[in-house]
Image 1 (cartoon, rainbow, N blue to C red):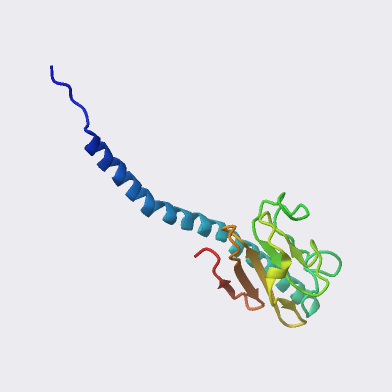
Image 2 (image 1 turned 30 degrees about the vertical axis):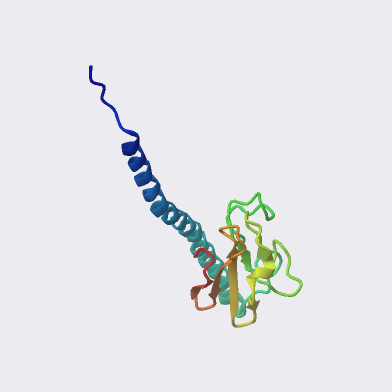
Length: 160
């Protein structure tokens, strides 16, 4: 009677091929996941810009806050007070002296501190707002800026 099956060498070759394919595809998969997470930025920064422009059209100057009295009346969709409870990942807004959570910036679920918003500002005729997050959890902050001309720029790529 002849028994058929795989030899140990054949099984080792198949396992080696699987490991090789995994070594190539897994890093690409994680880059793809990070880029999907970055898609949130374009939507929220464009929305923030629209709110700032609407305020400017009505008052002839940009507001000194995103939310609250005399503000652009903007918050990220579903904002609940900041931190882990949020459905958005990035921290959005302005890093200005005396800035407050829920007024000048909004902390996303990755809890990136507002200090990482960098050199953002609001003046009467100009502004730069930012979105920041440590997407990989390794201390490399992904930083995006938008200005009054709607120029969105990834100034520090945190996914590479």
